[in-house]
Amino acid sequence: MADEMENEPEEKEVKDNQEKPADGAPSAAGSTGPVAAPITQSLGKLELYFANGRKLLTVPGGALSINDDTRRLLALFSDGSFLVAESHKFDGRVLSFEVLARRKRINILKPVYLSQNELNAIYNYAERNVADADADEDLDALQMQKDFVNVIARAAEKKVSDIHVVVADSTQIMFRVNGMMSIEMEYNKDWGESFVRAAFASADISDSNYAQNEFQGAQKLGSTPLRGSKGKLMLPHNVLAIRLQFNPIAFGSQYLVMRLLYADDNPNGSGDLASLGLGEYEEKLFYRLRAVPTGVSIVSGPTGSGKSTTLQRNMIKLLQEKNYEINLITVEDPPEYPIPGARQMPVTNANTEEEKDEQFTKALSAALRSDPDVMMVGEIRSLSAAQLTFKGALSGHGMWTTLHANSAPAIIPRLRDMGVETFKLGDPELVKGLIGQRLFRKLCPHCRKSVKEMLDEPAVQRLKVALGDFGIENTYVRGPGCKFCGGSGIKGRMSVPEIILPDAMFLELIIKGETRKAIDYWTSDLGGRTMKDAAIERMLKGYIDLDEVERWCGLMDQRPVY
Image 1 (cartoon, helix red, strand yellow):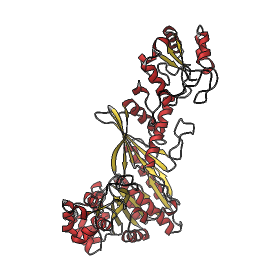
Image 2 (spheres, rainbow, N blue to C red):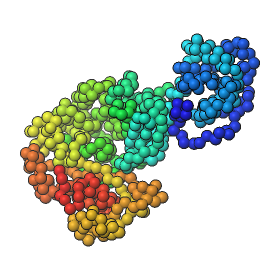
Image 3 (cartoon, rainbow, N blue to C red):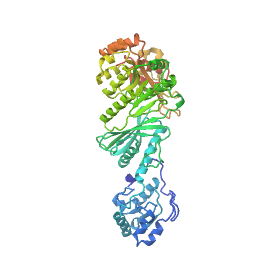
Image 4 (cartoon, helix red, strand yellow):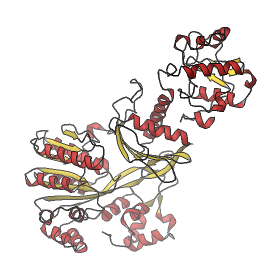
């Protein structure tokens, strides 16, 4: 019984001795009017139970789902009238139902006892008139919508980047905070399946129907109420949108991943790249790329590496530097963050990946015909999108985009693998900027520890080989946690990029597959700096720890691997 009804993520305990309203008194939900006691005075007429629009919530197929065994013991009406078979007045299932109904904030009055035959007659009457027994509002659906909003609100308080909902024998909800996954909540399987369906139903952009055994994507906008909520249920104010990915999984039923997109904490300074963790060196290189009128600049990295945020901040900065006198058009699937002053074109009317590629190509072609000065392509996912991006550069536009690639030098081989012609990739007039980045966890400055306290650790020995005593003196590791970081030892994340402004020699070496020579040429002749060097600089300033550098950039006593 508890498994069937317990779908409320609030963790408040309900006291068994909770005071119940007296007969004839308004319920907790504010319901007034006739209650169960007056109804039972005329048991000869079953119609009286359903007078004044009352609905039997516990009828099979009704608003409350309970099993047949429990249904033989009790009945609950929409006005809170609660009928119990007298022979089962002390049955634990009845008491459990009452407590859980109150926990779910369902209107329920003091029980009225009647014979088993009378209870059976009520259900027989209701089932014969099932068409009239439909609830005006699906209480389960409404409750799951509330659960959905509650989970999002709880995640938003912790600045969770992703919520993972895994439905198998039970349901696990995991939060990713600062790149780290942890189990936050656990519920039963039925609750999880209802939650996933409610999440799909809440989306503003989605397929027409939910298909449990298919891969589906959707998006929920923070500025719109949940469907069916009559405008009452909204996402937290700081959640701009949610990207939802629904996946079938083996040894389970559903796997939902929700990416939370937040509004800028400081909208007035949203073009400030320094707030992302970029230093003076990187800001100068980005400035040079924004000053270039034509060509392609590409930001790369894996999922969750901050590519979209870096791109958005650069576009805002570009518009500010140009006094908003240019036409900046974006093509995104879907738009994630607002860019004031830009025309952001969403890709819509697409369900399958093939349709998305087709619609994305159409939107990109339309943008090129809309008199742009600069264009931002949300992501290069296909050869057609790559070709149109380079076409925009060839026709005299500045093009900015993102790509899934391991590093800045790896962007060229990735595009070549997609099918972009070599003559385009080897032209420094077309390829203007190659950027790779990762998000590194920042140390809490209040509880971080010096590596001098752990000189025998292998990582510290590697640090000494690489940087000597200077590295030992200026490097810190994650501390035990404190009140300032919530006990995690981590205080947010920062971007650590590598930026290449390539010339013809660098591009030629990369295209020939001589990556190591290209890297050496970039760092020596072009004055470049690898991500590992950028990370070490931040490590020596105490921003990130030794383990985080080795996690993303390889061991300290090794050369960067590309």
